[in-house]
Image (cartoon, rainbow over all chains, first blue to last red; front, side):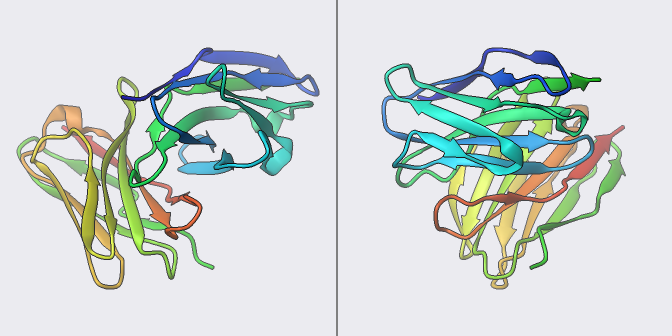
Length: 114
Length: 112
């Protein structure tokens, strides 16, 4: 079985401050890891993904994440946020090979204030 | 490249009715997945189709069904609607490589 835990349900942050969204997963097999963002009344947009290789993954809009296998974590970071980063963020996993479904965490709502 | 198109955007149905939602994937993509999003349960996987074959299915009752056509367009059907089926239904289009899933804007279903 696998599950995804997003450790913070809400993260308020000031504009231009850094932000970190925490994600832990549990799985008995290797996984592929993803971060998605959802703006109000929209679908999900892929920010970045880890499939293999370098554990530091860079994504769109200045976001990056680090895969830590020993801690089973995949935390998302941005060094300086903008008002437009206000959204809900989802961490997700896919088990490697023959599994095509994304299992999502509960989401983290990021609110950026001026 | 056109994105993933889901129709309709909004839908209101009465309990007991059935509903069909449509998803047109990105041109050339052969994988289509469906997800249900609710405030209480979050994002849950319904099923995934690849080249007209269902490859994976989530833990939903048999009232939820789907299919994929030869042009990769997919439909999802929910029969005997219940109030709890009210949700945002999202479709994801995949190229079958590198797990590059692109989501549509969703269909907001309200059951009254």
